[in-house]
Image (cartoon, rainbow, N blue to C red; front, side, top):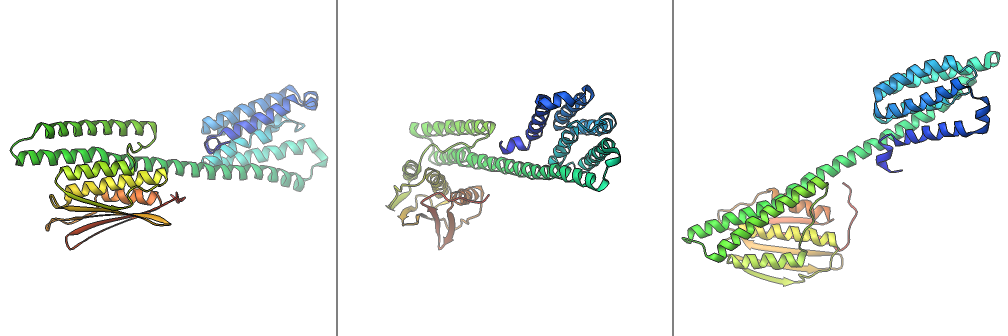
Length: 360
């Protein structure tokens, strides 16, 4: 049974169903059970189902039925003492401590009372109380265990939603915001040049369409509860971004191993980091300045180094793009270091060759 089922009350209903089925199908039970006891146990089963769906109504039914059962089941033949502890389990699972305590005390008292009536003169208070206490304690422990499972499931879902929102924000920044920034840069260049060529206008139109498509993809993936995958791998991204930088007048030099064979998730993360790094070169670097891209493959990791010249008046900061690069490097088990000195901006990315299991 999965964690979601355990945290939703399915276990309580399943246990109740097993108990009531075993009771009704057992040959001996059909001989000794009275219609009143059968009705009590069926009502107890219904109470479990109600308590899982409507806790307050279920609690009221549990208390009422426990009191009634203690008076009706004179021979203590029914399974209601066990069935009525399942709403206690459900209350503990949901963190309803006071409600669970009241129900548990009521069911425990009713169970002891019914047993005392059955035993009459043979009633041993110590043995009966200890026996029911031990049995009910098992249900209470199960309730605490399910509460831990429910809390873990809720925390896992909260982390998943938080990661999804962060991923959507980064996707919007890397796609929509990036394209809009480049559109603005192209428009400024056209304005400074006194006009735009047909090729430049076509490029602007293509970027606008790309931004719209990226926005739609991100919204669609958020609705599905998933993050949008990167379309291009590291090598494709490198080729695309180098062409873009050269088109904008930058002198790009590449060297080293720029075609590494990496795990798919690491390759995608490296591609996203490279895209953002070279976007920063185009956006913040010295206009038409040099840019170097170096790849180094070792026995344990892969290093990517991007450097470019910064304008004298330009300062570096930790914007959303920088946070996104660090986040993606960390999730992939790698690291990212940024430095700016003597007018040179350096981005060093270190990525593992294999996927590492990270704690989130």
